[in-house]
Length: 114
Image (cartoon, rainbow, N blue to C red; front, side, top):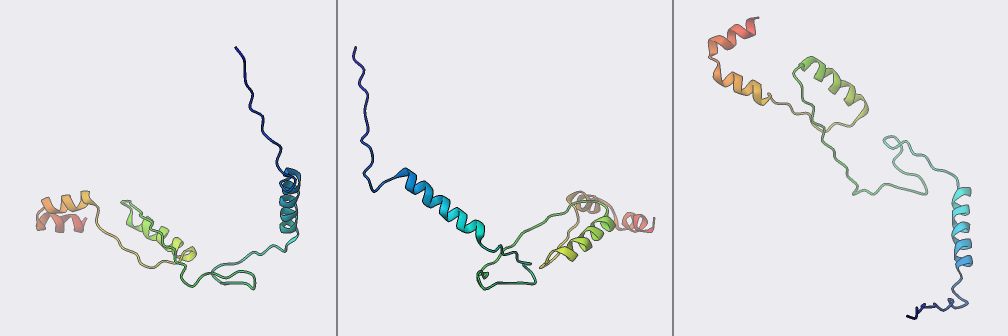
């Protein structure tokens, strides 16, 4: 049984892998020689070479869950020092909500007096 091997033609003279590799290395070398730009974003919004789009927006949501209200309040205070906070919401946990629904007003007042 004969085995056939497909041979590919060598690319034309204008297509040179060596030339393409050297061009890529030249671009990389030019980028290495450029002055590095480091921005302090909240204080410095743009430079002569780069500016932040006026339409750029980024939002994130952080959900904190816990039973120690004082510890959560302290953590939120520390986060506010480092992050721009648009709003803070909190709610009673489902377990506390269910417990409050099953207790009478007298029991609730007794627990608050503890």
